[in-house]
Amino acid sequence: METVYDWVSILIFAGLVTLFLQRSIAETEVDSIWHYLPPALGCAIGNQLGNNDWPVPAVTLFLATLAYIWYVLKPGRVQNSGD
Image (tube, rainbow, N blue to C red; front, side, top):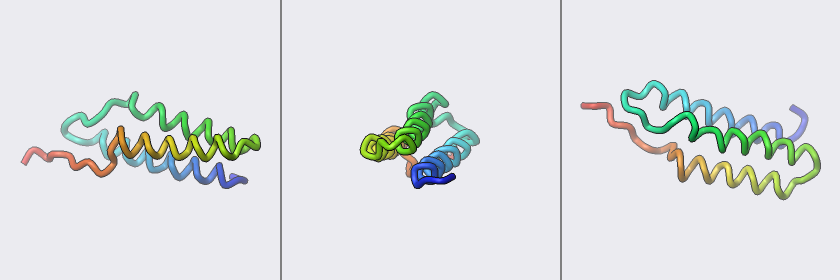
């Protein structure tokens, strides 16, 4: 945990894990576990790019990862509780 890229990737990944855990206990299946693979890889690859002195591709990949999470996983989506 030495660079800003480490912290950014951990923060994005922690939010992704939290979203996955919330969705995994839902009564109805909202999305598949495979939908979480691209943003997880985006965090890992973005971190490696940033740590290896490729700041522009790293930031671009982090932004693309956040866009994927927002448009594909839709974290604000309300689940029906069956009421």
